[in-house]
Length: 124
Image (cartoon, rainbow, N blue to C red; front, side, top):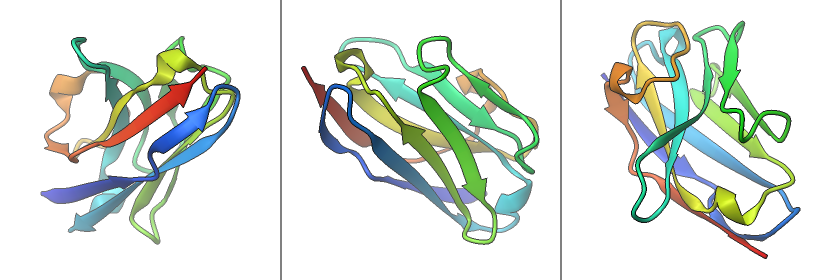
């Protein structure tokens, strides 16, 4: 099992940038795939991006492709989500999740470790 803590959320203007971090503690995090999901008020949680255990595979939702970049530093037990050219529709609570099977997945049910989330608000 791993424990995840997100940080880096906040208020940003449309067109700006933000970098979220997901710091992990626990054994063997470097062998876990990690995903970012987001949930806006009154809406279901949605996939944003995912990265495999060794970063050789990444996946993105169509809505963020070309604007967001997921990366990881296994020496620091941290996964990042670089958010560029943000839009008001990116406003949500962002969660990172990890799964011990190391391939990236777009499905939230395949992840068994979740953080508490960090709020991102984009003003127009």
